[in-house]
Image (cartoon, rainbow, N blue to C red; front, side, top):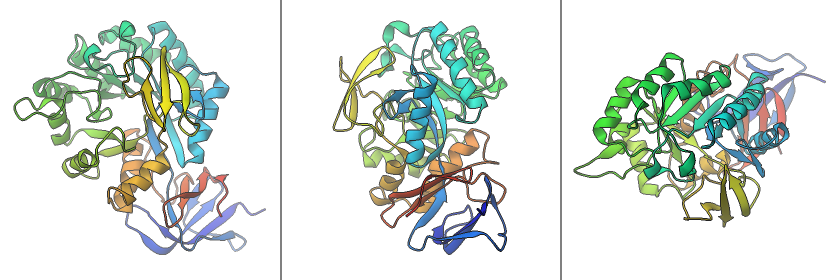
Length: 379
């Protein structure tokens, strides 16, 4: 069987702009510039061909948790999101005891080392009790650099991001520690002022964890973290575009002020993503998912999402009116650059991994390829 494939006839979206009746050539696990005579040709006329989606903030899916599940559970969650076009995923944890988080880091780092995950994101325990969201308040702690270093060591080089309330004691020193180790310091679940947020950015923070959510609102006399995060060119803002976490006007505001190169679409997905309504556990807290919206049983706070990246892509184009090119930047290229993996994923270019998604004219997934192998067979 030929290992080379020519995906022809689609509207292809490389970094240079959409190509009508374009083609992508796959040789083995990579995209290449030319095809041998015996290459398999697949006609994708009437479809879109876009890079595989990259999700830097994801807690699980398919009924499985990245925070508490077995290796098999984590792999099930990864596969669930691949079916929806996410070919690169970072596993996010939630607040827990330090020893437990270190143990989880060991398990997840093994999956990252073998290529199933793109790394680990620690969301908590270094967050504000005032903005804890779906995190257990009794397990929260200040971002002591020694504790942050403990998690980095447990992750064996696979930590990609740590979310911090940088206004807490130790916050700024922890931001500097993360920057020194090449790990993203993300500002989130924070009660910081505008001035405190600027200080954290100057110290090396580069990401806003799910902008607008779990932080003070934008005020005209006390602009808070949102204004600081939107105005600074050094910050990439995460946005959860599920229609629940953000009003369309807030989504448009963020895109308008941050610009297309500073937005990363994320899912913040929990176990129910790609699975269904019901009762779930998010760390030690019980969650009820009803009509695809996840909320804590006690208190009713939004508890992650049931979003998959294909839905985020479709909504961005069909509801919010983004161009396909801008959506591709936000859902593939920008997060890949944040992870330092844009040389391998995030765009359709020769030499990169053959990670791609086939969408029909309505922007529904019709095919998913990862490293040259079909996860979802097209057509």
